[in-house]
Image 1 (tube, rainbow, N blue to C red):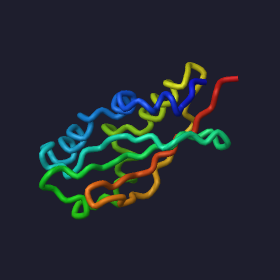
Image 2 (cartoon, helix red, strand yellow):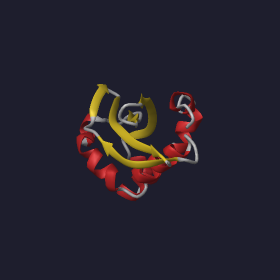
Image 3 (tube, rainbow, N blue to C red):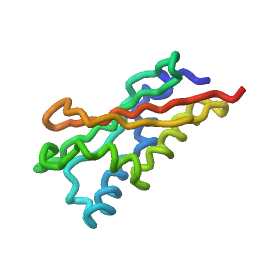
Image 4 (cartoon, one colour):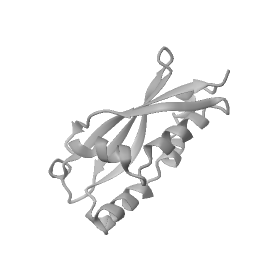
Length: 134
């Protein structure tokens, strides 16, 4: 298995897993206009726990200019993101596992509760469980 800390240290890899355009696609589907979105979504790596065989990420919500994160009910987003086909957490988890090697697969994922880390940045923890083929 490739070292997760090396693989996910590259911002380009994270941007491939969750492309910037996905924010606009999400708001286009939700509101019919990407300009209505209050934030851009990006992926941030937070480490690997070998004991639990889990990858830890954050979905960062970056406030767009002239918009308000607090006014946009970001606390309900984990439930929305977990089911939304454009955000596609299940696919993101599978793709992240594949980057660690052909023998690695995602066995599950979980979104945590939204956290406000800054006024203009909220985040949602994402944990991806992985296993390797015998």
